[in-house]
Length: 379
Image 1: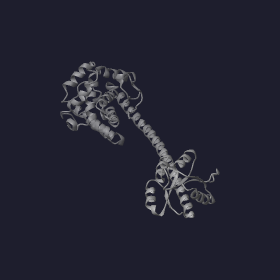
Image 2: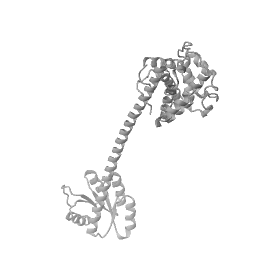
Image 3: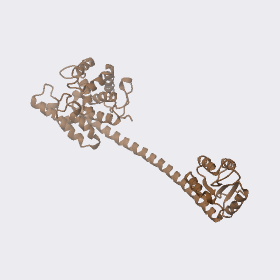
């Protein structure tokens, strides 16, 4: 028996006949291997526990634990170690079965010593390549994960830029139409609360909030003489005002990431009973975001000051929304709205007033005192 610590591959030979592993060990040593011999599978497992080996050459039939049993234990405890099963000529079938069980090769007794050396070399090289492949795969997975996180971060930055642009558009509209200053911001937050209560996912929340924020963007194309008129609009002026829906849709739908939000812009004046405009859609034909918007818009319109009247209390708006359930409003949306206490909406209005001129909030529950000041989206 010989054992050297010089960086050479180490082989553990297991056979209940020491003369066998002495003969095989000398041949391996002459070809540059270090080796150690064991007379039993139990002793081999102890050697594997204490020391590092590159390969095990084990006899199939041994007293006590058999070679197959050793293979099973060694494969579980030391998966990086190559395992070769030595069998007699009559046990070739068992050798093949051993390979199916995890052995890297089988050797037939009496040994062709040069053949054994070649098999050991191939088995060790196979294990080395498997380890390299596993290392490469692990590094590749880490790299993919790193690149994925970088891409997600970049997409978040792009998305934030998009939303900052939307906020600028909304702010520009507020400056032009002082009567509705802060309206888009408030309605967006009302929509966010109701949509969240209805179980909308992250993408739906983004779409609904963006659509609500941009719902009146088409008013950019309405003449000031009509948009800013303090009295009641004449029929022909009403027709012009109603075109803001399609003008807004045409503007927003050209932007790919706002395609879904554009549908809300187009449908935000539809009514649940089909008497709205521009398409006369009814019921669930109307996008969910537009149905949620209808309730939020009425809530804000009634509780905001107008040149012709003072703001009404939230209780009055609540009564009107209940009265119009099934006609102007989707009953399911109304139920979601009614689940909130009145102070939810009062808190949102108050916080938006404080943050006038700051970016839109799109995360958290203002009713619970959580009102971040950046546009962020739940996962």
